[in-house]
Image 1 (cartoon, one colour):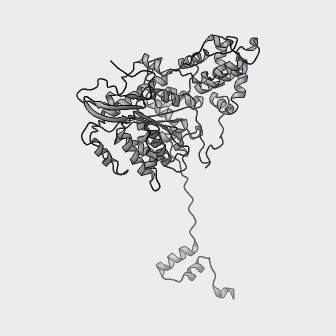
Image 2 (cartoon, helix red, strand yellow):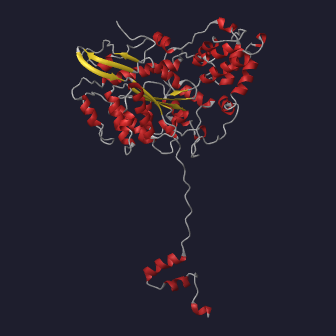
Image 3 (tube, helix red, strand yellow):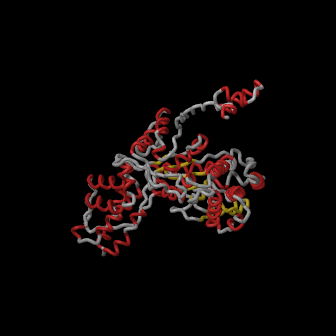
Length: 509
């Protein structure tokens, strides 16, 4: 059977695979066939070329090859789950959207005329197609894993005919954008249109982003563009920027994503750091939508997890020092203590160590725990306090506000006690390494309530604040005398004299 080659080209001509013959759908049938676990592992990983002979090169030549360490990508447990989740969401979205159905395009236009009055377009038998969200520690590979996963599907599929019928169609199976730093709704809409322009060589930005066109109108344009180009899934990265948006447009954007999923059958995948947890869990409805095909919270690698050994050994192969250093338990401990299991830090530290050693004499190019810790102390100078907090070596103290308005303090990592709670409470449903069981509801409730304000995010079930009752003020004599005067008909002056608040004028003469 003819199929697309791997690695997947960015643009391909449609090759249709056997789908549901009773309900043919060119958008669904043009996707690459599902991959089994071994094929996922093989196609997700990225291992740059390397040879032991390169260790004999001159230092300047080896220096140019050190960046290969940063290019290494090996699929870990979370990454495999993500690939399955994205593939499933994309295929399910096409089950409810078939451009061959009569009136499909006309009804899409009618459904997106007003942001406040949506109707499900004809041809969408079940438009409600859920997406999911991923929030996790910074540097653990969320964006990299998502990018590698999406690249297993072409960015553009060109159709010409389907089942003997002319079918000119340019399908964009997925779109990925980063949320703008200021969390602006309009800026996000423009980014989405720019992403389509980069794939299709169109001019949607100049067509729709004009003076007088507000964010709501841009959203309706995006809905039509996404449907007209058969987009299977939309990925919005850096979603934590919405939590810090000074404009307060987070609710508007999240509502827009809900419309895309429920009215147009387009799954939306939201990705962000731990700071996004309070945004995604601020309301039950939003937390429910964020929980879909994939574990919603990713945490850094723990020392006793198989993923740590997989990651470190995948990187250790790329060794350019003249002396070959064997990976020992002492070196393993030093690497983990210096990086706290953050994948990005592991690769950067390993590169920095070799950069430091390759210019030394040959006999002094051995990687030792002492060299690792000394290099980390210098190289991670900006992260020093954060890494100490993560490791539990120091108490968390309030950090400087990371936004200009000074109202929000973000922290994109979890402390050891929080990490233990999340690892215990959330289901790792893949059975690649160690299958886990679903925790009881009581455990999830305890873990949710442990995310305190001091930890950087709002509690999911915060305790009700006790409001102290204010002491009642003593009644004012003038006010009381006025009321008594209305009731008894006596002059106010007489009543004030009787209460002792005033004296008779004659007594002052």
